[in-house]
Length: 281
Ligand SMILES: C[S@@+](CC[C@H](N)C(=O)[O-])C[C@H]1O[C@@H](n2cnc3c(N)ncnc32)[C@H](O)[C@@H]1O
View 1 (cartoon, rainbow, N blue to C red):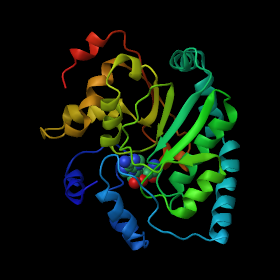
View 2: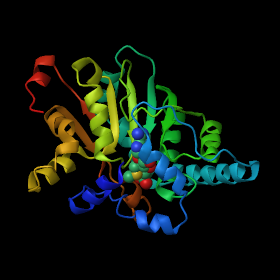
View 3: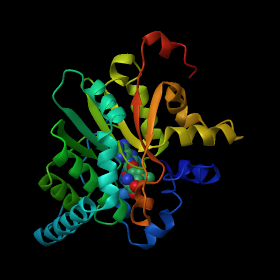
């Protein structure tokens, strides 16, 4: 995201979960690796990518791995996780998952925008949830992860946890040629919009399950926003709303509120291409 976009975004109403830009100054104080952030901002669509830091050491990897294991264990034993799984297994939601799966045996998982699991707690909890889902449901296939801020240590730990780290910044534009669960907790609106734009056709949209910021919340905010530029990065999000079935996540307790507030599951049930063509973009 360009620096100018950050400045503008502070003036606009944002759905909860998109306050990342607001807390940047605090992150700077926490000695975030500036080179990584600059690198991220300079990324061009579809550019090959590798972590900026070229070194990692076994001690930091093992420490981070232990930390992740304890987060996974804590989450697995939480009331929040039990309710989260029950929601997926509810007849209505499992029906949607089945429709997306169709005749396929597996649904691949693509994780975008997880953030830094070394530096922050929400990314650790979000990754733990994705890993627990993969362990629980046999219908979840390979897990791929991308965030331009991932460090070499994080990349190694992600691989040890069974995820493949992409070496290509897709800018969220992966086309769902097969059933795909996009796990995108608290990403910027532009990334969801890129994903929808790249999949703007009945066949692909019907192969997508999307976990991320509530599209309903984006719609509510854009309906009260007076700035004509307000919906600019959300055109596809707003246009897909009427075809979207959304299931909100209940973060339940304070422990998980910060990590999952205003998050939802989204399914796109579209009958015909004509329906999409008449949508105003
Ligand atoms: C608002 S932060 C959310 C981080 C984390 N999920 C959380 O809740 O704290 C958005 C994340 O999206 C990442 N991001 C930006 N461009 C991306 C891209 N092209 N592909 C994947 N992730 C991207 C950023 O680096 C950042 O970590």
